[in-house]
Image (cartoon, rainbow, N blue to C red; front, side, top):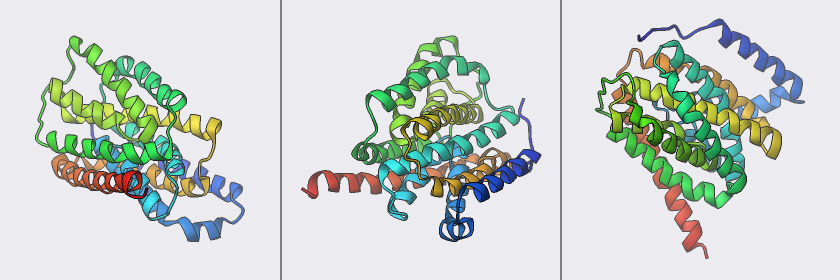
Length: 289
């Protein structure tokens, strides 16, 4: 049954206090750093709202902004996105679960192959700068198109048929691989597949996609933050605060505003991102030689 929930919770303020204590303790010049990077809080807020309203993932905002505005190299932008999404998508997943919109029984179908796909794309076929740029554009275009295709889907089914088992684990595996390379993919692919193939209720499909991308992002954040390293924490600390507050906005605001309008706007952003980065990747690959 669908539930409504309020935006402000004690946990938001508790985690914000923890963030503030950690920020002041860890960074030697917190005032100077804040003066330089505070706009990233807004970037995090917007990216997380988009990611948790549509299951696309905040990377659709973070990676282009970091590469084009902040001139961050693709690998650092990718790593920053992983640790940021780990916070933002988890915040959003908590909101969708509170709404009662997540069919949690399907996690046992999808999480194991999601993990396998993620590990393959992380350890066996390592993400490289040109791979990130070359793949992010097409994936952003695909997710934007999927959002437009599913705009008017009004699936009434509250559950998937048993014969969806194999297709779901395969799609989750592919989504895990793609997310390991470009930080987006798992959530929107799963959500669109459930809506288009089986007529699953859009809110339940998006809720499932958000939860899966949250799990995916946490795994990738642990791998890159603790094993590979290279996360620009002086920037990530600000996006993480933004997504902490922005993550709940997706499931909260879609209770009151038409999801169609939100998805249409964000689909156009994904298409624009994808087009710009694809053109840049083609230029670097062919025309700069």
